[in-house]
Each structure stands twice: as structure tokens, then as C-alpha cells.
Length: 101
Image 1 (tube, rainbow, N blue to C red):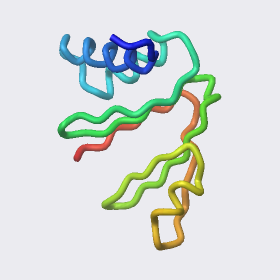
Image 2 (image 1 turned 60 degrees about the vertical axis):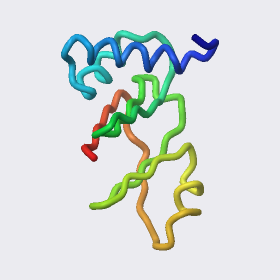
Image 3 (image 1 turned 180 degrees about the horizontal axis):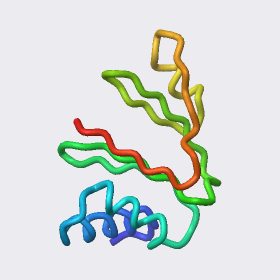
Image 4 (image 1 turned 180 degrees about the vertical axis):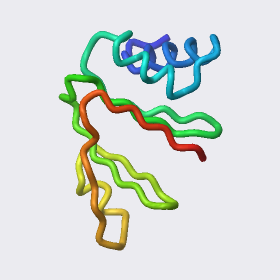
């Protein structure tokens, strides 16, 4: 009910899940079902998801370990909160990834 386009993504994913899609399936459908340039995260009570559109114009840096997933628009944001040396990566165009909590 706002003027923010991010709300549309949340409604889109929720509607897909209401009709039986998993979070990952709904997010994959968003890559072709939504028009525009986007990178977004979705959190549910038991999962965390990330999607990056096929144009990949929006920045995203990802760090994963056995017990932590960290995401940010710049590597320095992740490095500033982690005490150890880390290896990050930039997800590829059209990537969808879901982690179970």
C-alpha cells in the first residue's frame, strides 16, 4: 500500500507461494514475470532467498560459510562486521539462491 516498488515484489512472491510454489520457484518465476532491474532478498520464517535479475545491473556481494550468509551492496559492508578474512562473490545474472534456516 506504499509507493515503493519493493512492495510489489513481496506481493508477487506471496501470491506465488499462496498458489503452491516454493519460495525458490516463486523467485525464479520473478526473473521473467517482473519487468525491470532488481536484486532482492526475501525472508520467511524458515528460509532466506536472494534473486538477481538477468541484466544484473544492481550490485550484490555474497559471503557464505557453514553457519553464516551475509549479503550487501559492497564487499566493505560485509568485511566491516566479520573479524576474519573472507572470500566474497558477486552472484551471476539471473541467479536465485535459497537457504533454509
